[in-house]
Length: 282
View 1 (tube, rainbow, N blue to C red):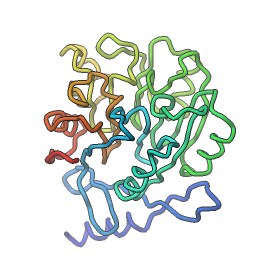
View 2 (view 1 turned 135 degrees about the vertical axis):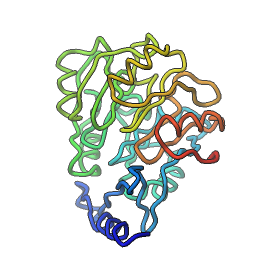
View 3 (view 1 turned 180 degrees about the vertical axis):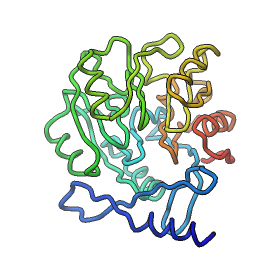
View 4 (view 1 turned 60 degrees about the vertical axis):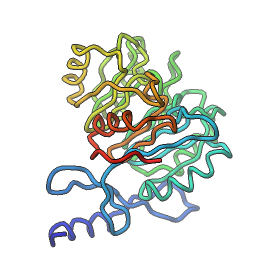
């Protein structure tokens, strides 16, 4: 490693983001930087590791997208006993961002009920005061947590975003569109994916690329890529499931896919998210 790269790594390790928690007393380091070639790497302690996708299940369920929400500044995990083992594992996998166990409106399918990025988190109106207080206490100060009142309350199904842009269900309220734009600090577009309005279910994106429903036409894929300014690839998860967001969660550096995801699907996932292609991770 060059002297310049060593200095950048030491600077990255020295920066810290406090959470709102007064009781836990720990700090989370900023964990991303770009090397000279422009590819993102994760900073884990004194090592720089390339991004990768790994296999995951919770209990006997392969639909990991229903139970997790992963961004560049936090990982939300459903508040269930079955998730305890994963939380311990995740603390090592994504060691520089907070891993927060929570429920939303008393439900564990938090991945389908909320949407967020490194700047904000949107949760349904039915989220309880205790749940909101817990999120505000545990998430980094820079993350704005806000409720969104809309008849389309499964926000993870009707909104997909990265840190710069969002696609929303064509029927989402105008007021909701403004809240999405303001809270997540993104440019918002009303669109469909493979002629389906549930854009949050049929598309997974990070800041470099994304995986889209396998039935999206070539023309639609080109239009979406131009709109989002991202490289998009069609694919499946969990051995052929077209509902890609049900079996995949990702940020710029890491992804978890359902346990039935095949090696061929992993190759497509890592290519879509602009990760270096690895062997399968199980």
